[in-house]
Length: 67
Ligand SMILES: [Zn+2]
Image 1 (cartoon, rainbow, N blue to C red):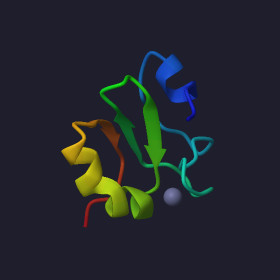
Image 2: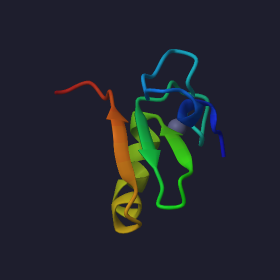
Image 3: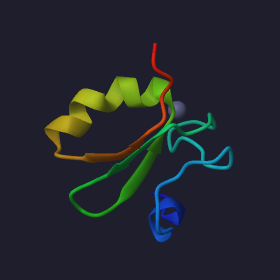
Image 4: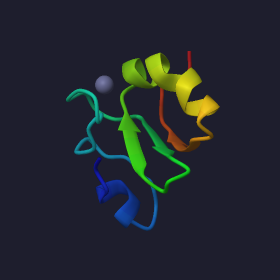
């Protein structure tokens, strides 16, 4: 689990932030109840969104393009 995003004062994402499941650019940041931070690309966030919500993860940043 990466912690670099949580160590910053904000959760602004840059091109250097990468999905924790693959190497795609991260567009969503979630904070788990445990305090851990996870970065997601749009694809993997979509796959895990239901489980994240069920686990009370908080979305602190969502930069997915609106359609
Ligand atoms: Zn991914």
